[in-house]
Image 1: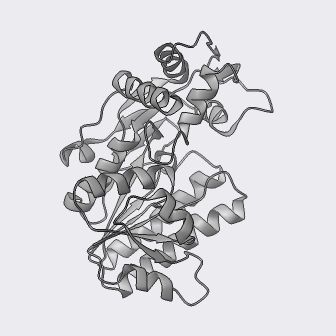
Image 2: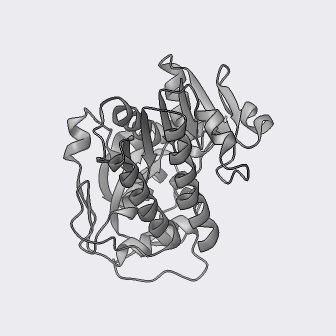
Length: 310
Protein backbone atom coordinates (compact mmCIF):
# COMPACT_ATOMS: atom_id res chain seq x y z
CA UNK A 1 0.00 0.00 0.00
CA UNK A 2 1.28 3.45 -0.97
CA UNK A 3 0.09 6.63 0.70
CA UNK A 4 -0.28 9.71 -1.52
CA UNK A 5 -0.84 13.19 -0.10
CA UNK A 6 -2.14 15.85 -2.46
CA UNK A 7 -3.86 13.06 -4.38
CA UNK A 8 -6.68 15.28 -5.60
CA UNK A 9 -4.33 17.93 -6.94
CA UNK A 10 -3.14 18.35 -10.50
CA UNK A 11 0.08 16.32 -10.30
CA UNK A 12 -1.16 14.12 -7.44
CA UNK A 13 -4.14 12.90 -9.44
CA UNK A 14 -1.85 12.07 -12.37
CA UNK A 15 0.34 10.05 -10.01
CA UNK A 16 -2.63 8.19 -8.51
CA UNK A 17 -3.92 7.42 -12.00
CA UNK A 18 -0.53 5.97 -12.98
CA UNK A 19 -0.31 3.91 -9.79
CA UNK A 20 -3.79 2.45 -10.31
CA UNK A 21 -3.02 1.60 -13.93
CA UNK A 22 0.08 -0.23 -12.72
CA UNK A 23 -1.97 -2.27 -10.28
CA UNK A 24 -0.63 -0.65 -7.09
CA UNK A 25 -2.73 -0.43 -3.94
CA UNK A 26 -3.20 3.27 -3.17
CA UNK A 27 -4.37 5.11 -0.08
CA UNK A 28 -5.03 8.83 -0.43
CA UNK A 29 -4.77 11.20 2.52
CA UNK A 30 -7.66 13.64 2.02
CA UNK A 31 -9.51 16.28 4.01
CA UNK A 32 -12.82 15.96 2.15
CA UNK A 33 -13.68 12.34 1.30
CA UNK A 34 -16.80 13.25 -0.68
CA UNK A 35 -14.87 15.57 -2.97
CA UNK A 36 -11.99 13.10 -3.22
CA UNK A 37 -14.28 10.19 -4.14
CA UNK A 38 -15.57 12.22 -7.08
CA UNK A 39 -12.04 12.82 -8.37
CA UNK A 40 -10.06 9.67 -7.62
CA UNK A 41 -10.34 6.31 -9.40
CA UNK A 42 -12.45 3.52 -8.01
CA UNK A 43 -10.52 1.31 -5.62
CA UNK A 44 -8.40 4.06 -4.06
CA UNK A 45 -8.66 3.86 -0.27
CA UNK A 46 -9.44 7.18 1.40
CA UNK A 47 -7.91 8.19 4.73
CA UNK A 48 -9.24 11.40 6.27
CA UNK A 49 -6.17 13.27 7.45
CA UNK A 50 -4.93 16.84 7.67
CA UNK A 51 -1.34 18.09 7.50
CA UNK A 52 -2.37 20.64 10.13
CA UNK A 53 -3.77 17.87 12.36
CA UNK A 54 -4.63 19.41 15.75
CA UNK A 55 -4.52 15.96 17.34
CA UNK A 56 -0.72 15.70 17.42
CA UNK A 57 -0.59 14.01 14.02
CA UNK A 58 -2.84 11.09 14.91
CA UNK A 59 -4.74 11.20 11.61
CA UNK A 60 -1.49 11.30 9.64
CA UNK A 61 -0.03 8.35 11.54
CA UNK A 62 -3.21 6.38 10.95
CA UNK A 63 -3.08 7.18 7.25
CA UNK A 64 0.56 6.10 7.00
CA UNK A 65 0.23 2.94 9.09
CA UNK A 66 0.81 -0.24 7.08
CA UNK A 67 2.12 1.59 4.01
CA UNK A 68 5.34 0.65 2.23
CA UNK A 69 5.90 4.19 1.00
CA UNK A 70 4.67 7.77 1.27
CA UNK A 71 4.55 10.06 -1.76
CA UNK A 72 4.14 13.54 -0.30
CA UNK A 73 2.80 15.92 -2.94
CA UNK A 74 0.47 18.08 -0.85
CA UNK A 75 1.41 21.73 -0.69
CA UNK A 76 0.42 25.32 -1.32
CA UNK A 77 1.16 27.74 -4.17
CA UNK A 78 -0.14 31.24 -4.72
CA UNK A 79 -1.28 31.90 -1.13
CA UNK A 80 0.11 34.24 1.51
CA UNK A 81 3.69 33.75 2.67
CA UNK A 82 2.55 32.53 6.09
CA UNK A 83 0.00 30.10 4.69
CA UNK A 84 2.43 28.83 2.07
CA UNK A 85 5.10 28.18 4.67
CA UNK A 86 2.61 26.54 7.03
CA UNK A 87 1.49 24.11 4.35
CA UNK A 88 4.79 23.42 2.61
CA UNK A 89 7.15 23.41 5.59
CA UNK A 90 5.13 22.55 8.68
CA UNK A 91 2.94 20.17 6.68
CA UNK A 92 6.04 18.35 5.44
CA UNK A 93 7.45 18.23 8.97
CA UNK A 94 4.20 16.65 10.19
CA UNK A 95 4.16 14.08 7.40
CA UNK A 96 7.79 13.11 7.95
CA UNK A 97 7.11 12.61 11.66
CA UNK A 98 4.02 10.54 10.97
CA UNK A 99 5.82 8.36 8.43
CA UNK A 100 8.70 7.70 10.82
CA UNK A 101 6.40 6.94 13.74
CA UNK A 102 4.28 4.61 11.57
CA UNK A 103 7.38 2.74 10.43
CA UNK A 104 7.02 3.57 6.73
CA UNK A 105 10.26 2.47 5.03
CA UNK A 106 10.34 4.91 2.06
CA UNK A 107 9.38 8.55 1.58
CA UNK A 108 9.38 10.69 -1.57
CA UNK A 109 8.98 14.44 -1.25
CA UNK A 110 7.74 16.52 -4.18
CA UNK A 111 9.77 19.69 -4.21
CA UNK A 112 10.35 21.96 -7.21
CA UNK A 113 13.12 23.08 -9.52
CA UNK A 114 12.41 26.54 -8.04
CA UNK A 115 13.83 25.32 -4.72
CA UNK A 116 17.30 24.62 -6.13
CA UNK A 117 17.83 26.97 -9.10
CA UNK A 118 20.86 29.18 -8.45
CA UNK A 119 21.72 32.65 -9.73
CA UNK A 120 23.30 31.21 -12.90
CA UNK A 121 20.01 29.53 -13.88
CA UNK A 122 21.36 26.08 -13.03
CA UNK A 123 18.87 23.52 -11.74
CA UNK A 124 21.07 20.78 -10.33
CA UNK A 125 20.55 17.63 -8.31
CA UNK A 126 23.67 18.60 -6.39
CA UNK A 127 23.40 22.37 -6.02
CA UNK A 128 26.55 24.18 -4.97
CA UNK A 129 25.11 27.68 -4.66
CA UNK A 130 22.19 29.03 -2.66
CA UNK A 131 18.70 29.10 -4.21
CA UNK A 132 18.13 32.27 -6.22
CA UNK A 133 14.33 32.50 -6.13
CA UNK A 134 12.92 34.35 -3.12
CA UNK A 135 9.14 34.10 -3.57
CA UNK A 136 7.15 32.39 -0.81
CA UNK A 137 6.65 29.13 -2.73
CA UNK A 138 10.32 28.68 -3.70
CA UNK A 139 11.63 29.59 -0.25
CA UNK A 140 9.18 27.24 1.49
CA UNK A 141 10.08 24.35 -0.81
CA UNK A 142 13.79 24.88 -0.14
CA UNK A 143 13.15 24.95 3.61
CA UNK A 144 11.06 21.77 3.42
CA UNK A 145 13.87 20.04 1.52
CA UNK A 146 16.16 20.63 4.51
CA UNK A 147 13.66 18.79 6.71
CA UNK A 148 13.56 15.85 4.30
CA UNK A 149 17.35 15.65 4.12
CA UNK A 150 17.57 15.81 7.91
CA UNK A 151 15.08 12.94 8.15
CA UNK A 152 17.23 10.99 5.71
CA UNK A 153 20.20 11.66 7.97
CA UNK A 154 18.20 10.17 10.83
CA UNK A 155 17.61 6.97 8.87
CA UNK A 156 14.32 7.47 7.01
CA UNK A 157 14.80 6.38 3.39
CA UNK A 158 13.72 9.77 2.05
CA UNK A 159 14.32 11.13 -1.44
CA UNK A 160 13.37 14.37 -3.18
CA UNK A 161 12.04 14.94 -6.68
CA UNK A 162 12.28 18.38 -8.29
CA UNK A 163 9.88 18.69 -11.22
CA UNK A 164 10.24 21.69 -13.51
CA UNK A 165 7.14 23.38 -15.00
CA UNK A 166 4.45 20.68 -15.17
CA UNK A 167 1.85 20.60 -17.94
CA UNK A 168 -0.22 18.12 -19.92
CA UNK A 169 -3.07 15.66 -19.33
CA UNK A 170 -4.25 15.05 -15.77
CA UNK A 171 -7.47 13.68 -14.31
CA UNK A 172 -7.93 17.02 -12.54
CA UNK A 173 -8.21 18.88 -15.83
CA UNK A 174 -6.21 21.71 -17.36
CA UNK A 175 -4.57 23.19 -14.26
CA UNK A 176 -0.98 24.34 -13.64
CA UNK A 177 0.80 25.58 -16.79
CA UNK A 178 -2.07 24.23 -18.89
CA UNK A 179 -4.01 27.30 -17.82
CA UNK A 180 -1.35 29.51 -19.38
CA UNK A 181 -1.34 27.45 -22.58
CA UNK A 182 -5.10 27.73 -22.92
CA UNK A 183 -5.25 31.42 -22.04
CA UNK A 184 -2.65 32.21 -24.68
CA UNK A 185 -4.47 30.11 -27.29
CA UNK A 186 -7.70 31.98 -26.51
CA UNK A 187 -6.04 35.35 -26.92
CA UNK A 188 -6.48 36.16 -23.23
CA UNK A 189 -2.76 36.81 -22.71
CA UNK A 190 -1.04 39.51 -24.71
CA UNK A 191 2.57 39.16 -23.69
CA UNK A 192 5.11 36.98 -21.87
CA UNK A 193 8.82 37.22 -21.21
CA UNK A 194 10.59 34.78 -23.53
CA UNK A 195 12.63 33.08 -20.82
CA UNK A 196 13.84 29.51 -21.40
CA UNK A 197 12.60 27.21 -18.63
CA UNK A 198 12.16 23.50 -18.02
CA UNK A 199 8.95 21.68 -18.98
CA UNK A 200 7.76 18.18 -18.09
CA UNK A 201 4.54 16.27 -18.80
CA UNK A 202 2.49 15.44 -15.71
CA UNK A 203 2.49 11.72 -16.55
CA UNK A 204 6.26 11.74 -16.98
CA UNK A 205 6.71 13.57 -13.68
CA UNK A 206 4.48 10.94 -12.05
CA UNK A 207 6.67 8.19 -13.52
CA UNK A 208 9.71 9.96 -12.10
CA UNK A 209 8.15 9.82 -8.64
CA UNK A 210 7.79 6.06 -8.91
CA UNK A 211 11.39 5.64 -10.03
CA UNK A 212 12.53 7.67 -7.03
CA UNK A 213 10.35 5.54 -4.75
CA UNK A 214 11.54 2.23 -6.19
CA UNK A 215 15.17 2.97 -7.03
CA UNK A 216 16.09 6.29 -5.43
CA UNK A 217 19.00 6.51 -3.03
CA UNK A 218 18.57 7.83 0.47
CA UNK A 219 19.00 11.60 0.67
CA UNK A 220 19.24 12.15 -3.10
CA UNK A 221 17.48 14.69 -5.29
CA UNK A 222 16.12 13.86 -8.74
CA UNK A 223 15.36 16.66 -11.19
CA UNK A 224 12.43 15.79 -13.48
CA UNK A 225 12.69 17.70 -16.76
CA UNK A 226 11.54 16.83 -20.27
CA UNK A 227 13.11 19.75 -22.12
CA UNK A 228 14.16 23.36 -21.70
CA UNK A 229 12.30 25.71 -24.06
CA UNK A 230 11.36 29.41 -24.08
CA UNK A 231 7.84 30.48 -23.20
CA UNK A 232 7.16 31.89 -26.65
CA UNK A 233 8.00 28.69 -28.48
CA UNK A 234 5.85 26.62 -26.12
CA UNK A 235 2.81 28.91 -26.28
CA UNK A 236 3.01 29.38 -30.05
CA UNK A 237 3.41 25.65 -30.69
CA UNK A 238 0.41 24.85 -28.53
CA UNK A 239 -1.71 27.51 -30.23
CA UNK A 240 -0.81 26.03 -33.60
CA UNK A 241 -1.63 22.51 -32.39
CA UNK A 242 -5.15 23.53 -31.32
CA UNK A 243 -5.75 25.62 -34.43
CA UNK A 244 -5.69 29.00 -32.71
CA UNK A 245 -4.71 32.13 -34.66
CA UNK A 246 -3.57 33.89 -31.50
CA UNK A 247 0.10 34.47 -30.77
CA UNK A 248 1.50 36.20 -27.72
CA UNK A 249 4.01 39.00 -27.96
CA UNK A 250 7.35 37.95 -26.48
CA UNK A 251 9.57 40.31 -24.56
CA UNK A 252 13.30 39.69 -24.12
CA UNK A 253 14.52 38.27 -20.81
CA UNK A 254 14.89 41.00 -18.23
CA UNK A 255 11.65 42.71 -19.26
CA UNK A 256 8.68 43.40 -16.99
CA UNK A 257 5.06 42.42 -17.52
CA UNK A 258 1.97 44.49 -16.80
CA UNK A 259 0.76 44.53 -13.19
CA UNK A 260 -2.28 42.41 -14.06
CA UNK A 261 -0.26 39.46 -15.44
CA UNK A 262 -1.47 36.11 -14.08
CA UNK A 263 0.48 33.79 -11.81
CA UNK A 264 1.94 31.52 -14.48
CA UNK A 265 2.59 34.32 -16.96
CA UNK A 266 4.37 36.13 -14.14
CA UNK A 267 6.73 33.17 -13.81
CA UNK A 268 8.12 34.06 -17.24
CA UNK A 269 9.19 37.43 -15.80
CA UNK A 270 10.64 35.80 -12.70
CA UNK A 271 12.79 33.41 -14.72
CA UNK A 272 13.62 36.11 -17.24
CA UNK A 273 15.49 37.98 -14.52
CA UNK A 274 18.12 35.21 -14.47
CA UNK A 275 20.38 33.59 -17.05
CA UNK A 276 18.69 30.84 -19.11
CA UNK A 277 17.71 27.77 -17.13
CA UNK A 278 19.97 24.78 -17.64
CA UNK A 279 19.56 21.35 -16.13
CA UNK A 280 21.78 18.78 -14.45
CA UNK A 281 19.70 15.61 -14.13
CA UNK A 282 22.18 12.75 -14.38
CA UNK A 283 20.81 11.11 -11.24
CA UNK A 284 17.25 11.01 -12.59
CA UNK A 285 18.50 9.67 -15.92
CA UNK A 286 20.44 7.05 -13.99
CA UNK A 287 17.16 5.77 -12.54
CA UNK A 288 15.83 5.28 -16.07
CA UNK A 289 13.83 8.52 -16.29
CA UNK A 290 13.10 9.05 -19.99
CA UNK A 291 10.61 11.91 -20.38
CA UNK A 292 9.11 13.18 -23.61
CA UNK A 293 10.16 16.49 -25.13
CA UNK A 294 8.10 19.60 -25.69
CA UNK A 295 7.00 18.81 -29.26
CA UNK A 296 5.45 15.45 -28.33
CA UNK A 297 4.19 16.73 -25.01
CA UNK A 298 2.35 19.66 -26.55
CA UNK A 299 0.86 17.42 -29.23
CA UNK A 300 -0.52 15.09 -26.54
CA UNK A 301 -1.76 18.06 -24.53
CA UNK A 302 -3.53 19.58 -27.54
CA UNK A 303 -5.23 16.26 -28.31
CA UNK A 304 -6.34 15.92 -24.69
CA UNK A 305 -7.70 19.46 -24.50
CA UNK A 306 -9.55 18.98 -27.79
CA UNK A 307 -11.13 15.73 -26.58
CA UNK A 308 -12.26 17.41 -23.35
CA UNK A 309 -13.98 20.14 -25.33
CA UNK A 310 -16.01 17.69 -27.43
